[in-house]
Length: 306
Image (tube, rainbow, N blue to C red; front, top):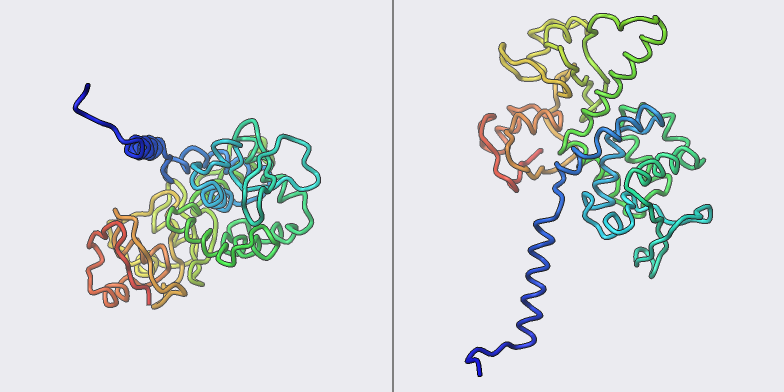
């Protein structure tokens, strides 16, 4: 007889721990999820007019970055329920009510397409398409007002995902591609020489533009009717710095405070990065947080915004 004895509860606990470890190892990170689906979101922005940032943020939120049971077992990445017009496969789970019916797709791409059709073919979402496709904040609020979600914090959650992950850069890239495509159709030849700047936006009610490939502070300043030194001052950058594709470039001075109280860092960023994300003067953030602009923030570190 073996001198070791096994308790049933211990075996069950071991199995649960093993399952948790396996699931953690298989879990998709947000960065991986965005990298996987950003291209398709941009295609849909060009085809349907839905901002890529909004589509990606909704997908991240609704599917838990592709890790929810609904996403893994039913390929439903947007939490779309069956409704009366659905004749396809179904998936049932508890949500706002018990055993609710959700759409079941053969593959995730079908979920992304159905999300676009869901928004474009329903009258209650028509107002969204009168908004500037670069106005992701307006879209986030409009989705809640049109009844897409019941969570009162839904717009705030979408905006946070967009800004923390710089998803607005995909909107700018897509707008640039669309302009090039239109030039080719109109002229029947190659597109014109590089035109500075991509999509215009507002962050913290400050006018800004999204840089495209080939932009410099000088070219953006000239296009905006500003001097280069003034644009560098607005963005609080040195004489050797240049914007990268998708970066926000402010066309006005940033503000001294934000509508948000705090920001939780994901790591690998500085106070200047937070300043550019929220449209707040970096010198103000230095004073509020008693830090230097170049200090590296730890993951999970809280930054005061006002």
